[in-house]
Each structure stands twice: as structure tokens, then as C-alpha cells.
Length: 500
Image (tube, rainbow, N blue to C red; front, side):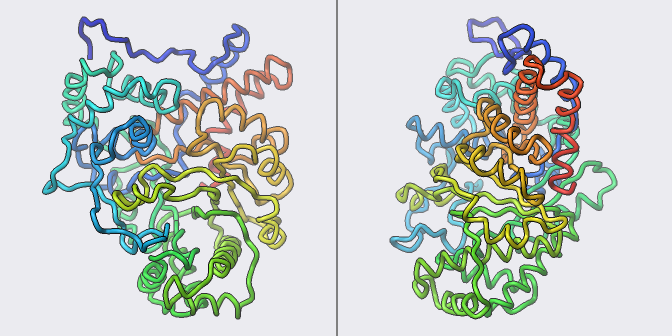
């Protein structure tokens, strides 16, 4: 898109994220050049496999670039934009149990369908453009600039003055075959894309892709069953029953639930899964006796109020231990994302449901909470436990040292609130001292925003090149070793960590 204009140019600098020092910058260029066009390995993300399997044109610029990206939504909301103006449905009466932060039995939020009144995509795009400067200095602005320039050919920063023209430009591109999901999959250079899937999912889209000879990429499911860990959730009984139904196993007792989970994990493995993902409040992993966990399970089937907070916590900790036990048995990589306060703002939860931007970081801890699990499984052959945190103080204090001793432990990349260029550098410094590079995960894009995937991976490659260059210019590493390490970070290391 080009025209004569006084608007701010959109042209990402070729040396962005590299050091100001000319020597270090030159080394970073060499390192980055070795991985700039390397295939993307994305072992943890949230793109729906059906998007790629169906290969339908994207509806409009806003539904592609704004509404699925919770990073974008939360910053707009923080700057005074109501979620209803961004496409969220006001639930008006579909609420969780009073006094509970548990999620509703059925997913309460959803994107509007065509029959419902909603702000049109153009209006949402105008809102983004009007708030463009609110993203200055954030990784969201960095990703967006790269995405808009490299994928959609924009040459001006969004603004109120050019919002309609840019919207029309992108909308016209989306009508072209080269902008459909599968064509973009190839254009982005994606080799492997992992999705995140409900334990009862039939994985039909994954099966279609695997059986399609015209699709040469690899899309694998990831088994995520967070709700089953916490019997205090209002939807716990529903989830337990639905897993049993999907597995064809009675989950009315705890042994039945464990058997059903093992069966569903096998089903995922048959469809290409190599990993599970678990988000819990803390990393506690103290096991219970068979009798005690069976007792709590039976009580919880009567309803959330039938178990105490202490019992629910003990049950959750035991389930985390059982999860590791299952991974040792079946080989699925165990990703662990603890330390997030879900649904921090109750009024927003009640109006718009969960996953609306107010999940916030908690203080992280791993060494003591994970000791029971690691005592049993930390040296088990083939067990991989990838630890993620939104509290970066634990990188050097806990995650790095754990990964530097236990063969099973891997240091997950900065995630969510800290997947920023600066935090990536701090992560590398903190983890490398204790565990070097081989006990890390590779970059995690963790995104639902499909077109942001290459921008996010490019950011990580630049940040890693800058860090490696800093080791070269201080004579801690040769340039040859730095180039080889950069190549391993984007390929060999994530493939090995996630058994890809």
C-alpha cells in the first residue's frame, strides 16, 4: 500500500533488537542471518486446527488480527475500550456460582455470530488505529508492525486518518488465494504447529490434515485438561463425566477417571500428539493415598460445596503427581504453566466470561512444590517436564537450577506477560548460567493470532542473536559456536524437548 502522505512510515528497522555497539551489532547480524529463514517450530500455540483444515478465506481484518489476540484486547481495554466494542458478547445473566471464581459449566463467552448485533470489523479496526500509540514500547506493537508490513504490505503506521484505507487494503488481500490459511502456513515457513485441545475433542481436523496428501505441513494436537484437576470448579463434574463418555469408561470413581484420562491420552497420541499442557494455580505435587483421593473424588461428585478448600488443593496436587506418572508411562511431554490468578475482575467475568484479559501473574515457586514429583520421576528415562512461569524471578532461583540437575526438567521460554525482547535476554542470562541452552524449550508463541506467528518467532530469533552476540564480543563464545547454537535453538532444541 503506497500513497503520498504525511503519515508516519511503517518500515521495521533491519537491525531492530541488535546492540548499538557496531561490533556486537555486526555479530548479531551474522547470527540472525543464519536463522532468519529457518522453518518455524511452534510447539505450543492456540490456533484452531480446523482453520487450516477448512482453508476458508478469513472473514475480515479485525476478526483475523484483533479479536483473537488477547494481548491486543487487554491493552485496548486498559486504555478505556469496552470489550463489547471489540466483539465480546455481554452475557447478561449467564453467570458462575455467586462467590466462586470457577468457570461456568459451559463456556460462557463466544464470539458473536452473524445473527447478533456487533460492531463491524471496520469499527473495531478504527478503534485499534485510534489507540495505536497506546502500544508504543510493547511487544504487541513490535509484532503488529512486523506483521502489517511483512504480511500485508502496509507502509504507514495505522492512524485515525488512514484506518479505512488500511482496512480496505487488507480486506482485499484476504480475498486472494495466497492469503488463505494453508498458503500462509507455507509462506510463513511453518514446519510444525501444535494446537491446544480439549480432552474430549474428536481431533477430526487433525485427522483430515494428516490424511491430506496436498498438505505437507505438520499440525499436532496437545492434550489440555485443566478442569479435571480442581474439584472446586463448578464445571468439574461435567468435565469428568464428559471425559468418561469420550473414553467409554465410568468416571464415577477416581480409578475410572484415571483410566479414562489414560485412554484419551492414547487417542491424542494416535493423532500425533507429543505433549500435554497444564495450567494450575501452583506447582504442588504431593501425592495422596489411593483411599484419600478416592474419598475426595466421591465427595466432589456431590458438588463443589461438598469438598473443602484444603481437600480441593490436596486433590489438585495429587492429580499433578498422577499427570507426571502418566507421562512417564506414555511418553507425552508434560508442560506446566502454574502461577496465574484466573478471572481477577469478577464484574468482567460475569459480563463477558473467562479469557477476557484479566488473568494476572502470581508469585512463582517450583523447587519445593515439585519435590515430591521430581523425587519420583525427575530422573525417569524419557520423561520431559517443561516449566513455564510468568514470574521471571524464578528463572535463576529455581527453574534454571532444576533444569541444571534433573534430566527431566526443561526451562520453558518466557511466556505471556514476559515474552518480550528484554525478558528473553534476561531469561537467557538467568537460565544459561545454570542449564546452558540444551535444557530449554525453544521459543513459544502461545498465540491464537495466526498471522502473528512469524513476527513473534522473528522477534525471538533477533533477541537470541543479540544475546549470543554479547557472549561473542566478550570472548565467552566463538562466533562459530554462536551461529551453531542459534540454529539449534530454532530447530534441534524444540524438536528434542517436545519429541517432535
